[in-house]
Length: 98
Image (cartoon, rainbow, N blue to C red):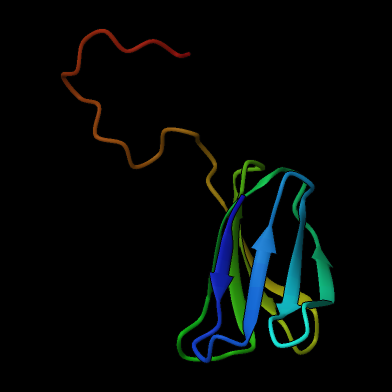
């Protein structure tokens, strides 16, 4: 569902309904690597503008992960402890847990 181009436009990181991230070489159309670690659909991807070796992903598993493309490892994983954390809902009427 999510994808992001590298700053030089030669690489693409993509996530989909399976919980994996794929890196693509756009010059030849080949998948160069597959990263696994999420347990839900990948909803968003972004490649770092500062380092072509870092990609960030978010997933329906309620985590955000940072990946090192060179080592193919997730080096940071963040998860909210509460689904509604950070939402300003004080005084709002008509909200339900759904």
